[in-house]
Image 1: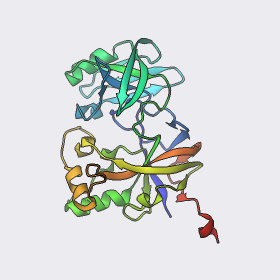
Image 2 (image 1 turned 30 degrees about the vertical axis):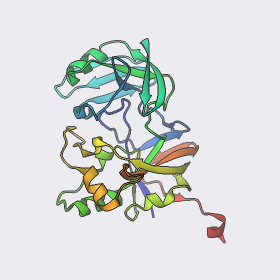
Image 3 (image 1 turned 180 degrees about the vertical axis):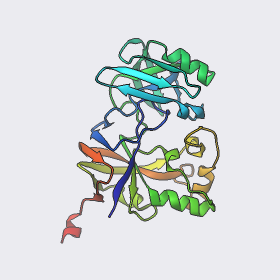
Image 4 (image 1 turned 90 degrees about the vertical axis):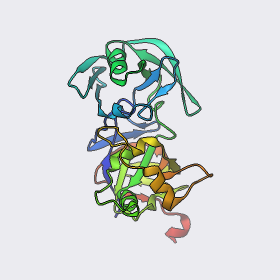
Length: 262
C-alpha cells in the first residue's frame, strides 16, 4: 500500500524545511507553505539556486499572531510582525508575474548580510503565489533510492534535497510518473497529477548546508534521459481538485477508471 511518509513545508521559500505530521491542502497548495520569498532589489527572484546556504536559515511563521521569526546559523535571531508591509514588488516566477510587498522590520537587512547580497523579504498578495509550477509536488522514496543505486552511492540519498511537499512510501521506483493525467486520493484530499517536475541545481546541494555535494542532475539524466532535450525530470506536480487534510501515514492511490472498475 502506498502511504505518505513525509511532509515538507517552509514559510519562506528556499529556507530550512519543516516536517509536520499533517498539512491542509487548499486549491493554492499547503496552508502556510512558502508564504514569503526573497527578491533582489530589481524584483528578481532570489533562491537557493543563487545562494545555497539559505537552507540553513530556520523560519517560523505564527499565522494567528502574524509574527515571523528567522534563526540564522550563527545564532542570530530576527523577528517581528509579518504583516507590516512596505513597497510593492513584482517578481517573475519563471515567466509568471507575482505581486507582493516588502516585509518591513529587521528581516531584509539581516538576510542581505547573511547572503552577502542586497535582498528583500517579500510577502506575495495571495497564498500559493510563491509556489513553483503547481500547488502540490510528490516523490516516492523508491525513486530516491533508485537514484542512489544507479549512482553507485554507499550512503543513502537524502530526499530533502528535492524539497517535495509529499513523499511516498510503498511505491516502485518512479511509480508516481504513471499517475500523470490521473486523479489521486492523498489522505482526505484529491489531486490531479499534471506533469513531471523538471529539476534544477538546488537538488545538487546538501539539504543542511546548501553546499553542492552530489551531481543529481548528471546522475538522473544518465539513466532517465532528457525531456524536450533539456528537462531532467524527478517527481511529479499536481493540482488540488478537492481540498482536505493530509497526514503522515495516510493512504495514497489513483482513482479507478471506469474500465478498471469493471
